[in-house]
Each structure stands twice: as C-alpha cells, then as structure tokens.
Length: 214
Image (cartoon, rainbow, N blue to C red; front, side, top):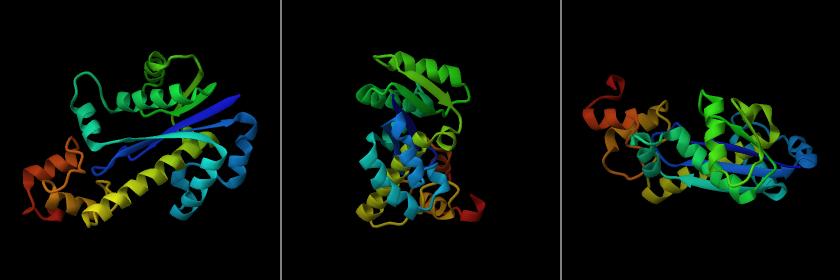
C-alpha cells in the first residue's frame, strides 16, 4: 500500500511563505525512513533536517507547494474561506497529483471531522484518510513531510534575506529580531503577512514605537 503524509511549515510567521509537503512511500518501506532517524522536524537540529531532506527525496515521491503571503492574507481576510481551508485546498492538490492509497494529515483545525470532510470533497478519488493532531509526531511518513516542508521553508527565508540584503530573524512574531524589524520596516518590503496582528500593530504604531512598548 502506498501511504502518504501531509504537513506544513511556516503557518505562524509574519514574514515569508508557508510551505506544504506530501511524502509518499510503500508502507513496507516506511521502516527505512525510521532507520534514518526521520521524525517530526521540530525534534531535529537544522543539520539533521538538511541531511534527512535529501535522503527523504531519494526514498519518497513528494510534492511541495509554496503559499505566498498574498495568498495567506487573501484567505485570512476572506468571508468564504480561511487559513485552514487554504491549507486543505493545497493538501488536496498534492494528494490528487500523487494519488496514494492512504493519506495521513496533520490537522490544523480543532474540528477533525470537518477538516476531513472538506478535503474529501476536494479529492477526485477515494483514498483512506487519517486526520489527526500531532500526526507529525505519531507517524514517520508525516515526519518526513514535515522535514521536506521545514527545510524548504528555511531555504525560502534564506533567499528572501539574500535578495533584499536584510536580516529579519526567523520571521516568527515571538522572535525579538523579527518584531523589531517589522516595527521599523512594515511598509518597505513585500514579504510581510499584512493580515497578521504583528504587522497591523506595526502599521498603527509606526517605527517611533520602542520594542519594549510593542
């Protein structure tokens, strides 16, 4: 049976894209991923993720989708959709393309059944779906997808920093470097998610606000 895992990286940052990944493998070969040390990307060092990234691409069929800040803002500001459904839409695109027999998805929604039902409507065939919270921790193949997504997202961040010659930290609002950069540069660069509260506050207060007061 061909099984697949679906995961994202970069859902929370105020800067840069979100990346979604699907990894597919014969269920009889999944142990090879485990033997390599594949697990949830958050449990690995950047060096370990980089090493496993190439190994996963050799063992698995995979797809990656980069979702831009503009697409994310459009979904967040829409009355018809939201960030969860945007993620589900792109998951369905990847599933339909690779057509695994079983798909395990790490669910961003609190409502597992609603998320599963939504994706089913977007699929043009009927694989077995497993929709869970913490699927990246519980299933090696989802861990593989999480590594593909995370390394790809990190590479996109490196490209942005090189292209614009700036250092904005990790891109996450919890990062003081990102927070300070957003406050001072909210209107200068096209890579911000303008629907995020962090960017909205920066726009309201402007660069005169001190970081400690933000």
